[in-house]
Image (cartoon, rainbow, N blue to C red; front, side, top):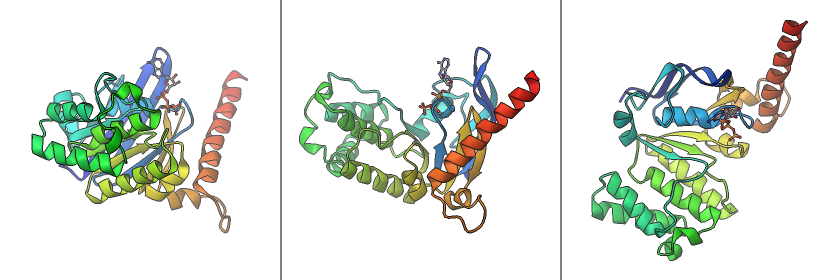
Length: 258
Ligand SMILES: Nc1ncnc2c1ncn2[C@@H]1O[C@H](COP(=O)(O)OP(=O)(O)OP(=O)(O)O)[C@@H](O)[C@H]1O
């Protein structure tokens, strides 16, 4: 694998006249945690869907784990994806769902049993593992969703709002798990609106606004963009960055319509 786990060049996705993602160029190192931030509708999910080969870009190129996203069969063994709504079969139990995914991923049965057992314990889901998923709460579905995303120990995992629906203890387990995945050299592409999670875990943060990357740096680098001496949280930095860019665009619009 190259040193870059994710590389995109001018990646663009249009729906009709509107660009959901525009001219996105990213270079994300292997083994790092990349925090991908942006207001609602900024294009985060669209980006993840392109990088996980679920939707085709309108233009531009990208590779994930050294494989072009045009080659779905080459990319998928290397990646895991937790989307906003984890794809689960309601009629299966949690354990059956995970065993099914382990089979699809060609994980040997004894290894799969061990990994599934240890992840169910870790997320305190063992007691409910033999209940049908249609009886699961949102948080329980989320737990199964993340376990199935990392079960095959992919090189790169895409997590869309991983702490969504989780109680504080489970959210802590999720954060610890992400940190551990990164320690094991897995690259984590993490999108969330919970900024302290990004501040705690991310090596690099990218901020998307209206489909464009408007800021990128370390969490501390983004916080320190303001005048020296000012104490800022990542939330302050995010609000400033996305506000500045909204204001710039309004200026551009008023100039072009004047
Ligand atoms: N299938 C689609 N058809 C048309 N427009 C779409 C489609 N999918 C996304 N969009 C548009 O693309 C833009 C980006 O959406 P996207 O879901 O990627 O944003 P997001 O950053 O993930 O938002 P959120 O934080 O709310 O989940 C939005 O304007 C959305 O309406």
